[in-house]
Length: 413
Image: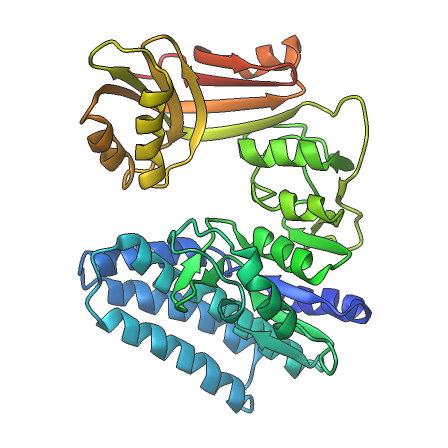
């Protein structure tokens, strides 16, 4: 959702589905998460420009609010003002030394704002939904920014929180949870889909529908590829593969809890609500339409043991330990006898820390400005298509998937 019209569209969808007793999992609105990341960065650096960033976030939400509510909606305005006041008070405090902790405490407000607005509007329009703070029941570890859900600890609180006895619908937050000590955590960017899957798993819900700004799962991102094709159905396995390699429509963790209980997942268009979308489940077929996943702004890191020892279990343990410590996901990995190559997103806050960690025992070189192209169900024609005006730097392929690290021809080294 990006504006007031999106909230109105959501109301129409919920109105049609109210007989199914929905749990509505909502992400932050528009580009709010990006704006919140900028806010927490300024706050952590004790840069007073955080006040301007905070004001822009508040103005964005109030532009939406003022199109949905009137001055008569006093209870709503009291509640939303309290949320913004709490965030403002949080920002007045000195930050701790743990950036990831501060990130989760602040960025999580994006989902609190959006769900409070959605729930308020549904109630205003005659749907008595209940706003539920997911942090009170969805419990995680304390791996801030990439928290792992504790299913065992969350099961009973989630079932107690979502009881439909007198409530036709619930509105809750995606992306966030909390530790055993009630400290806010986040599940990783785009984690709202995963939240919906976890709730479905714990409540034994029959199906999950994810409403997106695309008609379903496409075989490529229209930003990078023309003549895209919508995939009508996908197996759990292919969905996991596509999500793992980076298709933006599905969060990588979403499929596993659904597959374990055979829960159907449907990806549908938020704007074309009558279109069937893409169904993910126990589908069978010989071969899908080739799917293309493009990751831009990649860094290829080459890691060499200083003593020319083999890239074996002991060195791999040290290398993976550095990446795990700073929570940077590896998009591709490949090794020879005495070198280990990894392709990662150009995360400028984490890469220098990882290089410092690796430099204690390894020599590290890296190359910026690369692209990672993944093709699921590739053939020679699809490979040639993506290599036009590209230099192939590194390639890795299996029977059904090929990954290629490429660089634009003529681009400066």
